[in-house]
Length: 187
Image 1 (cartoon, rainbow, N blue to C red):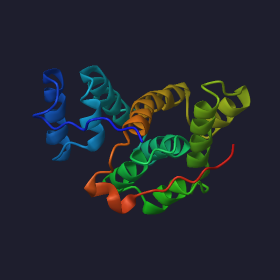
Image 2 (tube, rainbow, N blue to C red):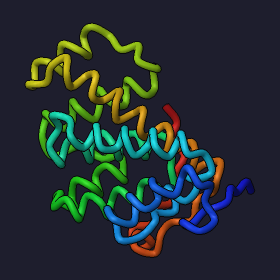
Image 3 (tube, rainbow, N blue to C red):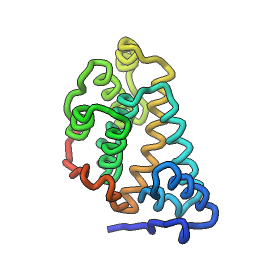
C-alpha cells in the first residue's frame, strides 16, 4: 500500500511551515491531510485557499456538507468521510443528514436532494450535465453561482481525496469514531 510522509512543523519543507502553523491555529493540531500536503507547499496552500473560498461561498453549513460528503463518498475517501462527519458535527449540521450522505440515502429535503444529485452528476460526468439537470437545480432555488461553487468544492475535494488515496493518510484520532468503510456501488 502506498504511503506518503505525514509532516509536522519541524519535518516539513520550509515553505510549508507557515501553512502548517495556520492549521494549528485553526484546528489546534495538524490534520493528517495537511501533514501529507506539506510535502508540496503549493498544494497545501492551494488546498487551504480553496477550503476557505468554499466555506465563504453562498452555501449554508448543510449545503457545504452535502457537496463535500457527496464527493467524498463518490470518491470513496477513507479519510475525508470521517473528517467531514466530525466537521459537520462541529458546524451543528443534523447528524441524520451526515448519516444519509455516508449511506447514500435520500436527503431530508427536495432542495438538498437536488444539490446532492447535481453534485454527483458533475462528478460522474466530469462537468457534462444536461440542461434538464441544470433546470431542475435552478427550479429549487439555486443559480449559476451555486453551479460554479459546486465546482469550487470539487476542486478542493479532488486535492484531498486523491492525495489521501495515494498517501493512505491515517484518520486523525479526533475523527476515528466516525470511521467509514468503503462499499463499492456500481453506477
